[in-house]
Image (tube, rainbow, N blue to C red; front, side):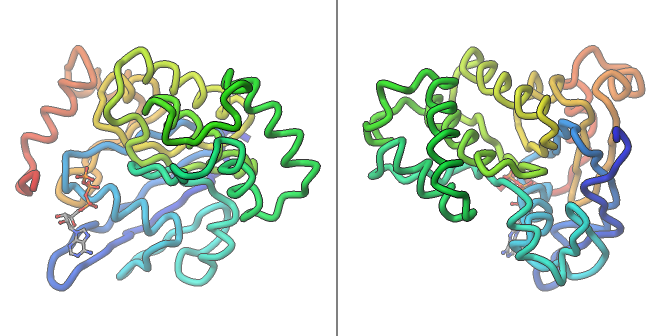
Length: 248
Ligand SMILES: Nc1ncnc2c1ncn2[C@@H]1O[C@H](COP(=O)(O)OP(=O)(O)OP(=O)(O)O)[C@@H](O)[C@H]1O
C-alpha cells in the first residue's frame, strides 16, 4: 500500500537540559519510500534518528515505527529495522564472511538462511573472491556497500542510514545508491541522512531540518518549484541560511 505509514511522529521533541535539539517535529514516512532527512550540521538529524530507532527516549511528543511505540516498544523497533551509522559498524578484524554471519546471528536467522543469503550477497557485491579477507583490507566505498548489505541482511521493514556515503567519490556514491534502489524495490523503506544534494535528488521525498524543526518537506521537484530553485542545493542553501545554530 503506497500510503501505508511506517513512521509517524507528532510533536516529537528532545531536550538536553534547557537546549531543545529536536523541536516538535511532525511527519510521516510511507512504506517503500526513499525518505531523505536533511539539515545542516547540528540541525538535530542524528538526535531525531536515534529516537526513531529506539536508541534514545524522547522528552515529549509521539512516534511510532513499524507500528511500535518509541517509548514502550524499543526492543520491537530494533528488531524491525536496520541501521547503518556514519562510522559503519563492521568489525575490521573479522573477515567479510564473518561479519555477515555475526550480524545475521544477532537477528536470530537460521543457518540455512544465512548460508544461502551470504552466497547471494557476495555474488551481488562481486566479493566472492574476497569473502575470507579482513574487512580492514577493503576500500572505504566497498566497506560502505557491505555495511549497507549487512544492515538489510535480516530483511527489515525499514533501514536507517546516517550519512552512509561520506568520504567517497561520486561514482562510488552512485553505486551505493543502486543498492538503495534495489532494496527499496523489494519493499524496504529507506530513511537516509546526507549532506550531498545530488543524493537528495534521488529521494522520493525530502525533509529539511533547521534548528531542530522541520522547515520543508516534499518531493525534490516540488521543493524546487516552491523555492524557485534550479537544484536541491539551492533549496537547501535558502533554508540553511536562516539557521541560528552554528555548525560546531
Ligand atoms: N547528548 C547531548 N547532549 C547535549 N547536546 C547534544 C547531545 N547530542 C546532541 N546535542 C546537540 O544537539 C544538537 C543537534 O545535534 P545532532 O547531532 O542531532 O545534529 P545533526 O543534525 O545530526 O548534525 P550533524 O550533521 O553534524 O551530524 C547539536 O547542537 C548538538 O550539540
